[in-house]
Image (cartoon, rainbow, N blue to C red):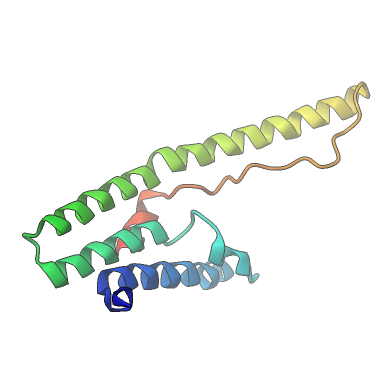
Length: 141
């Protein structure tokens, strides 16, 4: 049961839960509707990935010190995760937006020319995958 005493691990899990929970009231203020699915979604403000790796590194620093090898590992891992969140994952979300527009345009074209039947069960790709730099900053904060 040593895992129950692992402060860095629990700090990271708690940071994820708090960051995900904060997304709901922030979205409510912006849209005036409650969307509980944001609790389990990716992307958005704040970045739960950034919150998790920052809390993990902070917990490791508290327990093992800033000069420990394990802190160096967690810190570099955190930087990679945050860089990826603002880079690859964010651009994958942009690609999903373009692909969704292409599917919509294609379906409109098909409907206009009446050559093929409209697809009933089209599935949209998830567009909110990555984070804006400000979202990563506040997740880390």
